[in-house]
Image (cartoon, rainbow, N blue to C red; front, side, top):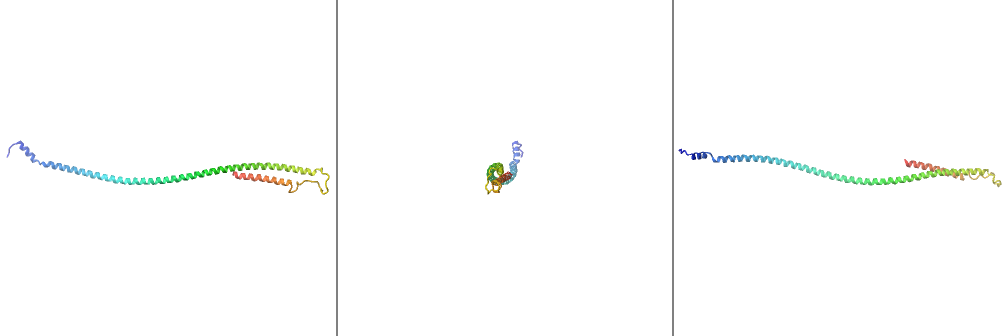
Length: 197
């Protein structure tokens, strides 16, 4: 019945409280916290899986890009090697052409000097032949008038005029030589004009 004891009353209050109630509450709180952590872990795992998948795709794309760039580098190096060889070949051809041009220029200069000398010689020869012709014509003109040979044999019915008038005579031969020099001068001038063009 009633004892009116405080100790017993306090004990009775404590016993009336279920001691497992706190333990149950702690377990429930722990379960809730574990579920929340599990959800967070699931979300984090989903994010990680998404990131891994994205990274794997990115890695594949970057690997393909690297392989493509390596292929381009190989093609470019092959193209550089080919173009370098072409440049080298063309440089050799340019050197050969330069040598040929220098040789042709030297030959042309030699030919020009020879043509100029030929033209000069032809002009001088024409003048000399003209002078020789004049001397011979004067000689034959004077010989025809000469009276030093007054005693002429009977076989001569006219005074000796020399062989200047005959087509095969000295004057005829000198006139042919003079025309040959004139032709040589004309042909050499024409050849020189054509060679300069």
